[in-house]
Image (cartoon, rainbow, N blue to C red; front, side, top):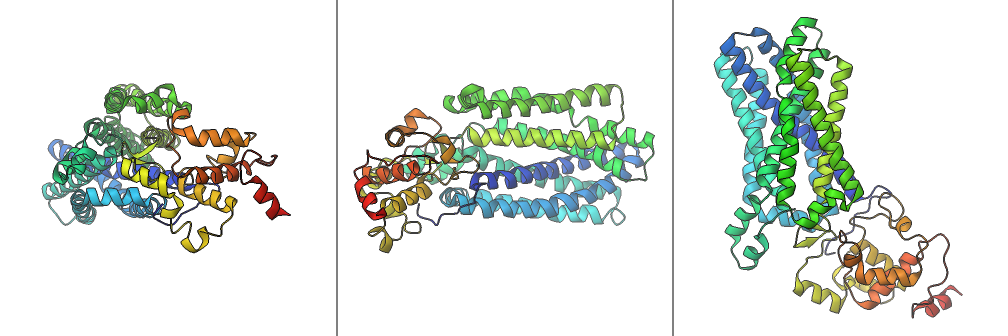
Length: 455
């Protein structure tokens, strides 16, 4: 509310973030997994004298340069751009609380990029052992980048006693308890397994695209890659471990409390297990062959699994951005702030949305629209994705107004509506007008005044 409003018509800000973030996570996980794959397989190829594998790694390293280093960088910038516009207060909190963690992550990222380029361009310039050492530098730096980012991401759902330490002035303790929070380890396991699996799947794609390999050579390379998919069977126990560490209300959303959340959770786990079973039975045991079409199907299943699990991770955090501290509408769940906003009004603290020189002469519907922009537009559009108009279609004005007073009690995944009674009246009147067929809101004391304005 202290920042300008950013509106994405029909799609909505959260969907914009989700599209960019899921794409980036998919690419970033591949970058980490590909680094580990190349380091492990090149070391194995040198010890067992397997030139075919080293030749393929040469071709595979080109994909690392083209996909993660270009598209990963672009989508990474896209995440920062979109979250800074849609959720600026939450973004500011993450930056300020984890400034040293971000610094560490950026150093790891720079080492990763530098090592990746050296790795790609030094196949014929370094000795095999030194080249493999560069591969390990890339792999470790990439995984350490994931390590740090994982702590910041999991903090948003399970911050532990971060808020209490911060309130007490123990900023060092708040940093460490926030970074190494209750879901840090299970999430790190989930992401590491995902990284390895994506690396193996992309091997199947690349080996079918490069024309130099015979059918027998492709089968050998695919068999090597298939071992990196087998750990996907750990997804189920790791997911149960992860959900066991989250608050009960968040866990309930994944286990039936929200149908979409439950379905995506099932999709993610099912795709992961099917990929693991296929890799073990068809590729490891039977040394089967994967065509280009099948490998692209496996990649699509992996993308669905990644997107589904990211959607669940974000969704079960509702109604918070940072659980227990900052609601999804970017109003802090802090007694002092809530008391001030309820007494003085939300719009008085939203200068970019409700300028002071316009508030005094604004009509009730304008003020209602401002209230929507401040408290609802972070998650809802008007009539697009997650649109509020279809959700209240046919509701009488009194029912809308009652919901505004008890929203967090009626729907546990929604934050409370904050503000003065007059501001809630204005929001109720504006929401009521969204109905395609409506009657005048006779329950509102302002109804007669608007009728006069209309005449």
